Image 1 (cartoon, rainbow over the protein chains, first blue to last red):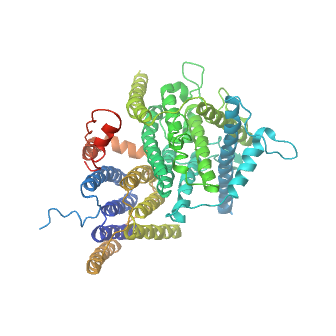
Image 2 (cartoon, rainbow over the protein chains, first blue to last red):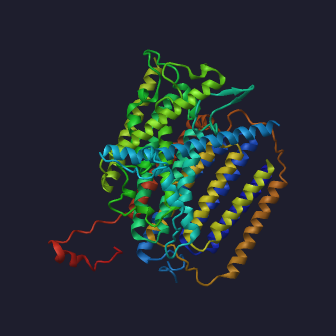
Image 3 (cartoon, one colour):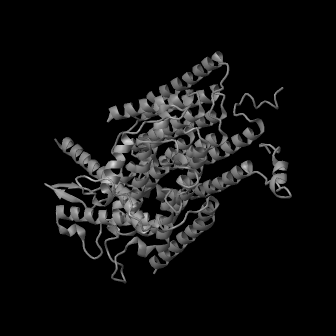
Length: 98
Length: 357
Length: 185
């Protein structure tokens, strides 16, 4: 069963990565990053149950904390960018381009 | 056979718990209408009657209002999808009903040799579960404000969201000191702890005696969380039409209403479990009444205490004037948050001092 | 029991597909809330009760509320993806499939002896996690709180607007002065 959960976690992580690469809206990219972090959390919990060490749960706790901090700062950046470019597409934020 | 009995017991407990919460919500609606009339020195609603009996307005509130709401036109504002418009009342009601699952009604009862715990879900982190469901209730409000395609509704929704997430912080912090005294987050264990008396005084170890400031903070934060007056700016009838519920009519509006009153019931249940002994009677041992009678007495005591706090919240609503929005936020972040932190430190300091003797 | 695991895994994958391929950000956010809730269900099935509740409380109840709040505040719930980039999509899909293949292959043919014994009493409960967190990992805990404080300061600094000075005078004359100042400051 742990193998199944690790594979499932890999599939969710892959979906999140696909979203980050393909989508152009910054907010959706942020949400796909959260999806990747949750996939990692599932893998950690499955392994914690397999080896019966509660340390896995503690790592998940810290991943959640870091994800919360990252989401807050990322959204602050999105708001700042929106104020200056009035757009949330990562293709249109191209002032430093070429 | 064993599995079938277990499933039947769970289904019965679920039916009783959800039924009790919905009945409490309905009764509180009636108490609100007639109680507000009493407080404001008027008669209130008394026109609907069956065979000449109008039962002090119960037929009006509990029969005529739902019939009216169900038969009204289901109206959709322009430019929104039916799915999102219906999703918002669902998200407002569903977490509130779910959070009642962790409340203990009474001591464990034994029927035919089988021990049944009078709690729908015996969770290890029961209190955290109730907070989690409370934090999910924000989605109904913010989605209702957005989907209404209406600036006033959106403003009401955003203000309500900011208010709810601010007061969630205070709600959590105000009882950590009390949880340090109880030593557990399991609601049934908290109620069992409140059964004995203090070591020095002959009064029961209720939460209100252990941490009175925490009670005041938690009660206030809970009333702000349920968007009840004096914190009812999101649905202020005199300022924002109906706030985030403006574009809702008929049964969807009644679902929002039901969610709000069910949340009053959940708030009252939380207060009795944490601060007023849950299903315990002050100097009696409820569990010693017998295997089945103990459970019934416990459930009756719990119901009476919950109803008392529902009526108290209704009275407070119709007595105090409303806060302005900046006063509300200042009160949370500059007033209640520091007080709750000081309360936490003081409680833990007293606990260390007592335990190190 | 296995049936429940497969059912919830299927639901989680479907709603993750909804997150990645939704047209509007708000629909994507709501699908993500559903995904987080289902991940909490997975945690509960893996005997991580405290983590399941914390997941709903922190992720679905706070972080996603913040995301939804920002979407509504900025009012950016529109669809403007423009021209699709099919080669980019195909290459990305191939790359992540290779990754999934390698990972799943490794986990299914792992040389470790995966045990399946019964769990100790109270595994995943709040007492065990609290004991470990505040005894062994207390330094990481304190650093995490400093990190959160830094995130708060950063978020406020990024989004705070300097107050515009109030115009002199009263009435229509003062209002006329501020009429053309615009929104973006």
